[in-house]
Image (cartoon, rainbow, N blue to C red; front, side, top):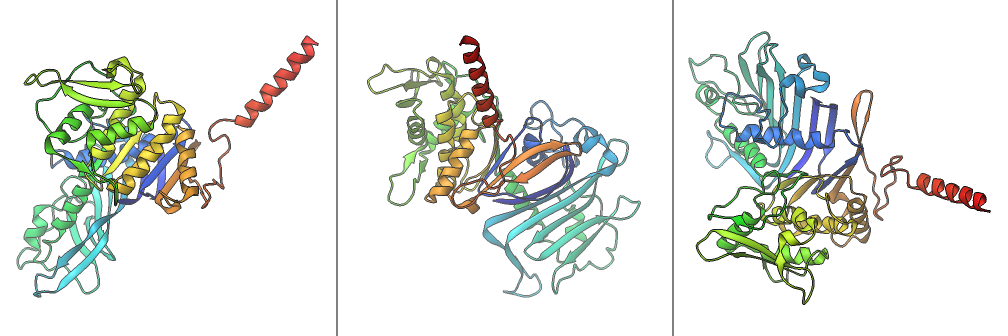
Length: 453
């Protein structure tokens, strides 16, 4: 699970220092205040790790990428590429990473479930990016590659009690540039006798990014027919276009999802149907092949008990909009991090509230981490209520923020929520000026009555 993010000079963010990430992290605030940019930052790292091009420092995206960020000058704060950009991420793994000592049998060098990665990236002025430094942390130990002054050659160092990197004899050459923005070059393992474990840290970083999933705000319209040829989609797609294929793939694999101790396991379809009913959207839900061997499927729903069964295209738009959110929450591998932009779009306020319960449930039964960008007061209010109740989520399991913008750029304000669900530092006009609207309405009504009298 991601535990914190720090960055400098990314889009509207001049600086974010140690932003705490919880199992449920919510980003609220004004339009164009940088909420989505925080998600784009994580997506940029993920798509770089997924890229087949080992020579690209940062994959800034294209038409097929979840984040398309243009050039480095477009990306950095105030478009000043000379200042560069810094990255700092901390995360925790479920099982501690143990690094054994290659020189001593049964001895270990380091062990921790807390990891970190940091990098500084700049431009050479010709549009080519370069890594100034990269650093991995494992517990209290850290391992760093640093670019030499005025050169594109690097040195390796460690800050760990009782440990130093040992060079092979006659291999005192400087190191070449890192692979992408986070990888130690192969020469590190070739030049140093005891640097093989660095691959373990790289793999842990890549695994963390592979377990990040994203669903965008604009989701596909429902279809009368869906094609599925037996594939197992890696995610929902940016617009949720793979939701039905994911349901069918989970059915084919016989996936059963635990609901907690003492409760029967459900298939993914049953879990989705349960939440659609809980939200008051439909009563029944099923996916069926039109005829055997066609690879064409239809989604049927029943709006209420005894109602006629119809296609998903013949009910309200909200069902198709919330379907990818539900499927991804229970389809993504256990322990994944899910990034959601405006999951509440096209949903009734009562359904928006119930979305909070979906996220809390997926957090509890599947250890899913959610980072949510939203404008929904109803979503936030439900989180507050559940914190006050204290049964399904605790205060420390949330990190809720208000994003705003001033002359210097975007600003991030943690919302101070007490044990009773109250926000003690509620920003002015957080969700509009409700009392101002009420006062203006009352004043207008009094004026109109006086004119009528």
